[in-house]
Amino acid sequence: MLVLLVHDPDSGRFSAAAAAGLSEEAARTAFLPRGSQLVKWLKVNETELVVSGRRGGADFLPAGETAVLRRLGIGTCFPLSSMNRLIGILMAGGEGERGRLTREETSFISLLLPQAGIALENAILLKEQRERLRRMSRADRLATVGELAAGAAHEIRNPLTAVRSSLQYLESKVADETSKTLLAAAVRETTRINEIVSALLAFSRPAEIVRERLDLREILAESLDLVAYQASRRTIAVVRDFPGPLPVLGDGAQLKQLFLNLLLNAVEAMPSGGTLRVEGRREATEAILASVIDTGEGIPDDRLDRIFDPFFTTKPNGTGLGLSICDHIVKTHDGDIEVKSKEGRGTAILVRLPPALETDRP
Ligand code: ADP
Ligand code: MG
Image (cartoon, rainbow, N blue to C red; front, side, top):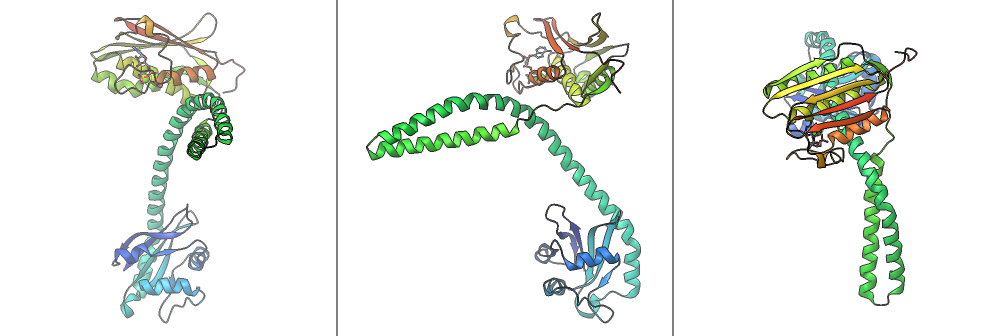
C-alpha cells in the first residue's frame, strides 16, 4: 500500500494526492495538519521514518498522529523534497508483518526519491502557473469593467442617498402599519443597492502603468502575429509598413492590448477578405503615429461618435468594450486616437503617442 501526500500551500496541510491499495474513503481522511510533528521530523531529518516494528519507533509523535498512521497501516514515511523544501510525503505500509518494508525495499525507494521530488515539484509549478494565468486574465477583465462600473457607481450613489433619506422621513411620519412595513422594506433595499455599488467600487483602482522605453515596431509585429491566423482564414492580405525605429515610453502589455483590439476590429470588418495595413512613422511634430487601416465595411458617419462608448457594439457577439479600452490606454499614455472611415470603403484608426526621448532610460 502506498499513499502520496502533497503539501497544500493554502491550508498548510499535507493531503493525499494519490493512493494505491487504499479505499477511497481512507485516502480522503489521510492527511497531516499544519504543524504536524511527523512533518517537522521529516523536514529536519531528510530521511525516512520507520513508524512500526522493531527498528522503528515513533513514540515522540502525538497520539493523534500515530492513530492516523495505525489506522491506515503505515509502516514507513519517506520525505519528498525539492530545493530543500518538503513538498510531499510518500507513505508505505500494509496489514501486519507484511506492512513492514524490507531493507532492500526501503533503500530502493530512497534511491528514487530525489527524482520523484523533482517530478512532483514540476507538477506543482505547472498547476500554479496555470492558476496564475487564469487569475491574471480575469484581473485584467475586472479592472476594465470595474472602471466602467465605478463611473456608474458614483452616479448611482447621490440619488440613492436622497431616495433613502426621503423614505426614512416618510417611515417616521406614516401611522398605519402596512405603510410602515412597506417603507421599512424599501429602506432595506436601498441598503442592499448601496452594498452592491460599494462592491463595484472595490474593483476600481487607479490605472498603474509601467513606463519603459520601447520600440513600437516590436509591439506592432507581435500584435500582428497574433491575428495572422484569423487574417489568413479570411483571405486578408497583411501589409507591414513601419521601416524606422519608433521609440515610445509605455507599458508594453497595454500597448499590445491596444493594437490587438484594433487589429481584431479590422479583421472582423473584412469577413470576405481585403487588405489590412499597419503603418508606423515619426511625424514632423516628432509624435509617433501608428495606423491600422482596413478595406472593410466602414463606419457610417452617424455612428462614428458612438464607437468609443462602453458596451456599444454592432456585432452579435461583441462586447463593445474593445475601443473604450483602447481609448483608455491611449489616454493613460498621453496620446490620442483618431478614426477616419468611409462606409463601404474602409476604416483607418490613427494612434499618436509621444516619442521617448534620448534621455529616457531604457
Ligand atoms: P466590439 O468589437 O466588441 O463590437 P469595439 O469597441 O471593438 O467593440 O467596437 C465597437 C464598434 O465599433 C463595433 O461593433 C463596430 O461597429 C465598430 N468598429 C470598430 N472598429 C471597426 C472597423 N475597423 N471597421 C468597422 N467598424 C468598426
Ligand atoms: Mg472589438
